[in-house]
Length: 178
Image (cartoon, rainbow, N blue to C red; front, top):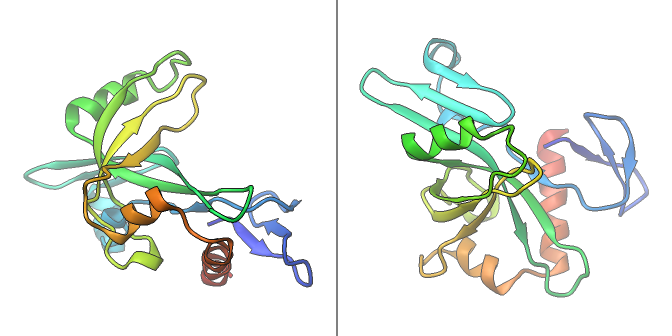
């Protein structure tokens, strides 16, 4: 997460990364998938590989592959939605296809993935099935949780959340960064 709330300005946020003050809501981002976060520092250096868009974990018997994605949460009583920067796991075939086409501005396709970010408000939000949709113009792919999967995160995605809940999530994330 790259934002800090500016004192005495409830709708302004100072970006920790660029130092600028922004009035729009910040995206709530996770720097790595929870699978990578759970590794020790030694394990990360031995068999983890992480950059801003891709993550791989090379175990002795398998390789786990992850990409960074976005999700837009509808806020029912506000004109602004809440954006997330999350991680999903992909199959080897999908991961390879995405990586091969990463710089292709016209690449549009869909993959199946599993959510691999634990969103604090939902406890264990791991392994929620998602459609991963790439977009032209080299924007990060957007995910859409499977509507028939029974989880509070999925219900909130399709039903929306309140402005008060969105602000609470932003404030909680900022507190945890500071």
